[in-house]
Amino acid sequence: MTRSLILPVLLGAFLTAHAQEPQAPIHLSGETYGLFDNDLLSSEFHKERREALRNKMPNGGVAVLFANPVRNRSNDVDHEYHQDPDLYYLSGLDEPNGLLIVFKEPHRIAGEQVRELLVVQERDPAREVWNGHRLGTQGAQERLGVEAAVSGAAFLGMDAFLGSEDILFTDIPVVGQAPDPNDPADLSDLIDGFTRMSSDVRQGASNDLMKWMAELREVKGPEELVLMRKAIDITCLAQNELMAKLRPEMTEYQTEAIVEYVFKVNGAEHEGFPSIQGGGPHSCVLHYVTNRRTLGENDLLVSDIGAEYHGYTADVTRTLPANGTFSPEQRAIYDLVYRAQEAGIAKVRAGNAFHAAHGAATEVITKGLMDLGLIQEEREVRRYFMHGTSHYLGLDVHDAGTYGPLKVGNVITVEPGIYIAKGSPCDPKWWNIGVRIEDDILVTEGDPVNLSAGSPRTAEAVEAAMQAK
Image (cartoon, rainbow, N blue to C red; front, side, top):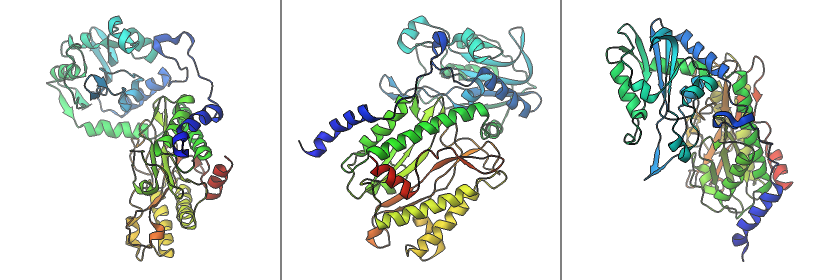
């Protein structure tokens, strides 16, 4: 057997013996309602967030949020379900075929005065045999702490309960597939029913609700930061494990397997986005996710990954030399990107413009590329640095936010990069050098905090971590 054929076997054995020790699982006593973790966001958190939204709404206002649709993968196989982040943020509901209505003032529904109504799937033992436990209305009230919960069928049986004086702020999703003939209260039915009930209501722009949710979600509270730190710590462990294992003749998908193994063994439910493992020429493809190529001796690997833990995702990028040592040209570009990132991170301070980090990073990269002779004029910088430097991070990898002045509690990325694809108008010695360094930065009342500092990012530290393997 050649080395390339025995590598998968050796890799599996090596990971089994030497991977990062998994963290102890966290179990919920009694596993009530089919939940197995005791560090989920609390019902008090979601209640407070609903109240914060209510405070932004005008008198008579009604905010309506629908669950994400179930997305079909092919034939009778669906994608794994992922809740609408706004609905999850306000309720904690992680099931499909639901909606949340938040009223500014108490509203009479079925003889009760309530300020919120959560519509959930009915308990159905026959279906739960196939797809697992459902909260039901009782579970929704006890676990999620909403004032009122009804099943989809009960909701569809209600008479219109919104008067013409109400202002409706709603963001209705596109279902994207035919209604489920076996479920008379799926999302499509709920949308039709709600449209019927609110036909006489003056509807406000959905942009208002989007703006309010962005204002709320861009500032992370203490409970959220606990989960974000967990997601980021797991992601740093994965990057460190990759540094210890990477070598030429690995495939990109084997490097993907390493990082995603570390995600799962440490309790992350998902990856927050498809893992980007771009080697050689693919290091110059910004969102490359095919991950099938075999790494060459002198290739760089751009590893852009993020574990998702209880809905919150990390986003950490490291660029690694496959053989453990940067070439002189690779090192020159890497050090330039690192200096640009340092300049960007220094600008992540409360009160600064959101895009201040990008401006600082761009200034460093522009001067550096000119000094290296890769560009002749400042405007040419976008040939090799063509993306923004920062985005919000949270329940989405590109999270909701206002993009106004930075606030205490914002978590944003700082991720400058340089990508010199084959055929670029420069000396070929620079071709196929793609470098991105990305970290997750918390805005505080003082200096910025690098939440992903647990993974090496200077060239010296990266090489040391790789050569220690």
